[in-house]
Image (cartoon, rainbow, N blue to C red; front, side, top):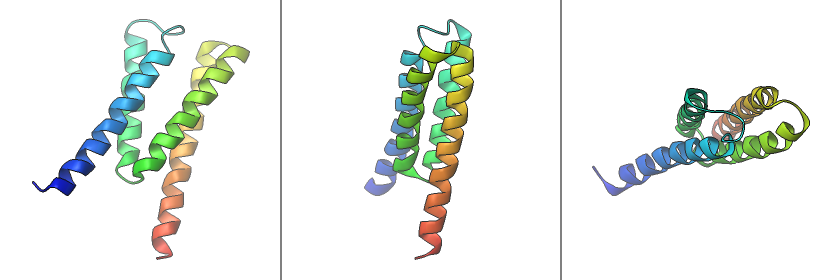
Length: 107
């Protein structure tokens, strides 16, 4: 394997691990046990899959989602905040993929 492939693989894995670890940390007050781990794993898989197409934008979309979750959970119940932030994450990742698609089609 050449160095470029290793760097890309490390960035893909790193973005997924980062998203999972941050999710696990910020949902600690609201979720317990397997639901906390399942949420972190789901977010890590989603961000990791999106990072294949839009490497840096997926992490930025995740950070926006995490900030939205931290704000929304103060206003509504944690389960509703988690659902709302899931929609924010899905919308952010979809928007990032569309942005990359338009950028690549205009090249």
